[in-house]
View 1 (cartoon, rainbow, N blue to C red):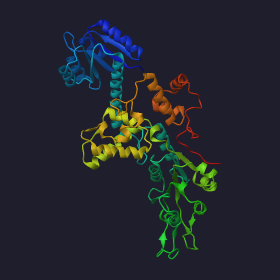
View 2: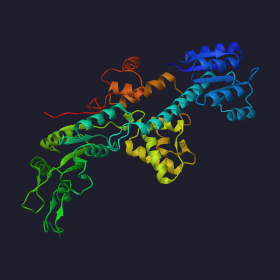
View 3: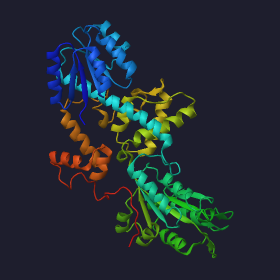
View 4: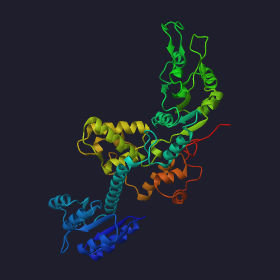
Length: 472
C-alpha cells in the first residue's frame, strides 16, 4: 500500500501543489489548512507521516508537532518553514520533529526526507515487534526464528528426531549446523545419552582414525596407553561429524563399515567393539560434486544422507536478522553488565542491508562488538563493525559512509528486488516471502524488469531451502 502523508498548511495552493507532486512519486497525500483540522483527521484516519508548516494561526506547527508526538509517539512529524533559523531548528528538535526543511522544499530533497522518515518509522516498529515476539516464539532447542524456511526445518526436525536415520546437514559456514544437530539430538529418544562432536577438518588426517575408533596400547609410536574412540564415547547417543567432506578417502570405507555393522575396530586391535550411535553429519561443501570427482565415496554419501536438511543462509531469512540481533544483544549485554536494550532504526536498516557472508556466527560477533562499544541504551551506527558500516549494500542508507550518485526510487527498488532474488537462489516464492509481498506482485515486477524465468538462479542449487529425502 502507498505511504499516506498528511500535509498541514494554511496555504491551500501549496498543499495542492505538494499533494500533486507527491502523488507522482507514489505517495498518497491528503491535506488540511489548520492544526485543529489535522488533529481531528488523525483521530479518524491513520497516516504514516505528518508534514506541517510552522507559521499558522490558532496553533502553530511547533505546538501541533508537540501535540502529535505526545498522543501518537510512533508517528513522525516533519516541519516546513520559510525562515530556516538556528532557533527554529532548535525548537523543532525540542518538540520532537523528525526533520526540518525550508519551504518551498526542493521536491527531490523532500521525497528523500519523507522516504527516510517513513523507513525509519517502519524499522522502529519492526524492532519493537521482534523484541516482543522473540520470547514468545516456539523454539526447537536453541533455534530462534520467525522465518518460514527455518520454521519448516524445525517441523522436519520434529518428524525425524525419534528415528535413528542418519542425517546430513548442509549449509554455508556459520549458518548453525551444529545447533540443528544438537536440537535433533535433544528432541529424540537418545537425548539422555551423550552428544559427541568432532570437526573432521581440525584433526590431522593421520590421527583421525584413532580419534574416531580409538587405539590399543602400542598401536603406534606415541600410543603409550589405550584410548577410547569417539564412536564408543557416543555409544547410545549421537555422533556429530562436522565438515564430513574433509574425511580422507582412505578412512571413508572404515567409517562406512562402522556405520553398517555398528561395530568399530580400534587401531592396532584385532577385536571389534559393538557401538550404537546415531550419525549426524554436516558440511558446507557440495558432496555430490565431490562424489563425481572421486573425492568422496558414493556408498558412504548415500549412507549418511538418509535425511537431508539444507539450512538457508542468514541473508535469505528476512527479518530473522533483527530477531537474532536482539537475542545476541540481550545475551552479550547481560554478560558485559551493560544496560543496552535494543538497536536504533538506522542500525536495523544496516543489519538488513548487509549480506552477512559469515551468517549467524558473524551476526553474533557483530552484536558482541556493538555492545563493547555501546554508549547508549540503543546500539547506534558507530557501534557497528567497520565491515558492516562500509559494505556496498549499506551505501544507499541514510547516514551511510559510501558516496553514490542519486538514482530514481524505481531503480533502488529494482536493485533491491534482484538482490533478494539472488539471495533466495532464484526461488521466487522464497524471495516474495523475504520481500513481504505476494508472489504475483513479485512476478509482475520481474516482468517489468525484463528478468527471464531462468535468471537470478545461483548454479544448480535446489529451490527449496529445506529438503527431506531418501536417496534412491
